[in-house]
Figure 1 (tube, rainbow, N blue to C red):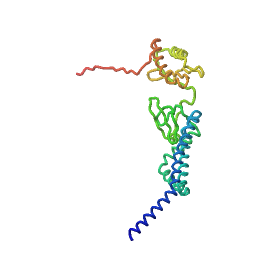
Figure 2: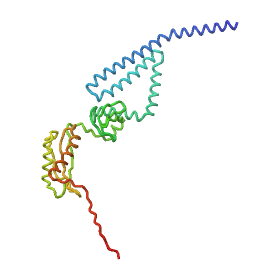
Figure 3: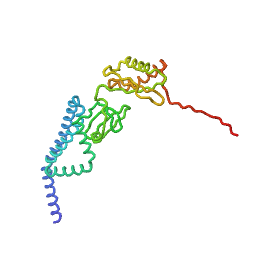
Length: 278
């Protein structure tokens, strides 16, 4: 009798399992197919968007691609859940509660996200600009959802949170096509000031990178403890600034040496007195 009852129970369980499989298997298969195809389509859409928008606006490109990709994937997961039979209302409520908890735990990340939105709206810099921020100087490579990637000139990759960039002072050194190159050269008090100024003007005229408009400014900037300091202000293209600065210092040193202009340095005279001791 017990064997008969066990056989009946097994048969019932088997029938229920078959019924569940027949009821949910098509939904699960369809949901899996939808998930795979959906992810493939999302990646394709983001890829096309990356190419099209990247050619027009590299600054907005990475940010929008990341944001839209995340939104599409969340919508896909909700759709797949509803296909399986999960109530989307409760599912959305769970996602909302989880989102609130994650948001409270990741306030810094939300601040970085808001900072990224502000950067894209007000555009203090764009991809390709050279900026100085958070103690680093380099070219902006990417503006992502949470971070901005900067490549320094000594080949380092710096990742800076967008929240820090949007709430702190930064310097965009490439927003204008020309910059003023500020240099100061000291000469001896006995040297001819007009002659030294004429040498600086000649070196300025001989360099093809020197811009004539605005005109350069060459004058006595200050009278130092050991030298008369000549202020040399020349305008050059932004890309030529530092090469021009370095080259001009070398040229000035050589020209001053040839013309007998002395570049002084601090000196100290020591007098030794010998006194007789009885």
